[in-house]
Amino acid sequence: MSIIPVEIQKQVREVFQVLENPVKVILFTQGEGGAIECSMCKETRQLVEEVTSLSNQVEFQVYDLVKDADVAAQYNIEKIPAVAVIGGGNRPKDYGIRLYGIPSGYEFTSLIQDILLVSRGTSDLSEKTLKELAKLETPVHIQVFVTPTCPYCPKAVILAHKLALASDKITADMVEATEFPHQANRYQVQGVPRTVINDVVHIEGAVPETALVAELMRVLNDSEMDRLRKDWEVHLN
Image (cartoon, rainbow, N blue to C red; front, side, top):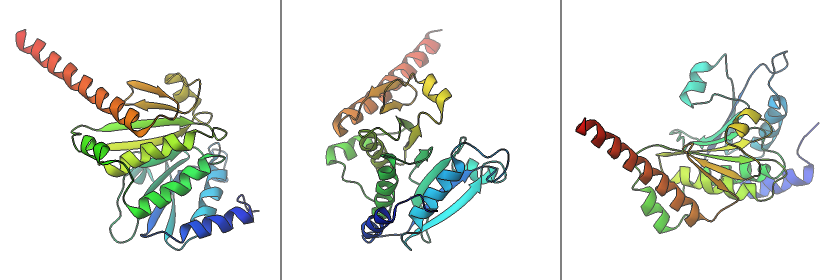
């Protein structure tokens, strides 16, 4: 029995007609059909498989976190279910776009938008933002904690994924808070969306592009100043 209603399938097919380039959607799971099957892995596989079947421009692949540990390591996957949305075709491109947990409810929109974003290969970020991102010299990890019932979360997720698409230095994760409670507790997630940059800055709500980029650059500037301070202390000693 299909997870996605027929009417929604029809709408997604129409949306996917504008896909410009091939997209590959990779699902990481474990122990499907067995005693060690992860929570929501089966449902995530069915959902993602149904979505990717709605366009011949979208390829679907599945890997087991344990059996295919080398592939999981290649994509830096450590928890499941996990979805990586990458450029497909003859020259695959990994933009660092990840979804951890089932992209259901409002997050179904994030999965669809990610496929459109990667197929297009460009974002609608402002020139000012692109200039700021071009200054990045060190890796940036953005995590956006969400729940399926949060109507404001997809906006925060897509913005983070646009930043990842625009910069090779950025990786961006959607993390479904209720599926990963230990991680949610670690970052004191009490409301969503909650965006975490490099384990340092926590941002509440779906903030505008300018605000998120300003926080991102502040984190990096503070980190650089801290590094210089430590280097100077070592020099003095």
